[in-house]
Image 1 (cartoon, helix red, strand yellow):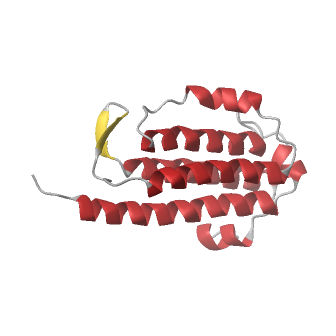
Image 2: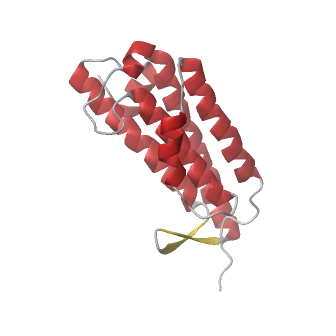
Image 3: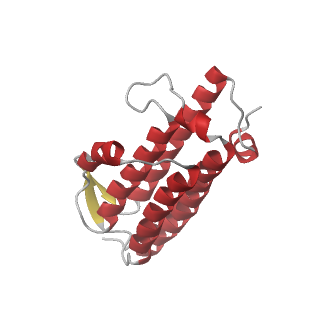
Length: 167
């Protein structure tokens, strides 16, 4: 069997770079919008404020990071994280994300074998796939944020205009 460890390490490195970019856009989103906007009701069941979206994004990141630590993927704590959160400021939101980022990067920095197979959603993938899923999840929320902004006549940060070719 062919050893893909060098190739997989390079793929992981590229994905980590992509993750940093996606998360930076999220941080810039929080900084750009007012707390009033972040708390206003959205036309979505469950995650009906930007704050709830951002907390959920942090909790999902925690779940994916646990896989990098060798645990099974388990989203059961996501709802508990939403219910137990008492975030009141933009800085608290950013800090919550940064805490999970720190935990995530600690796991990433300790991985020796990105080729290691893991089982997610009843299929086998190389370990770096976790990062790809994390990027997808973050950008999925970015897309929702964009749709909500258009429907509510809200503005976008410059970085979002540049990245997503928004008006």
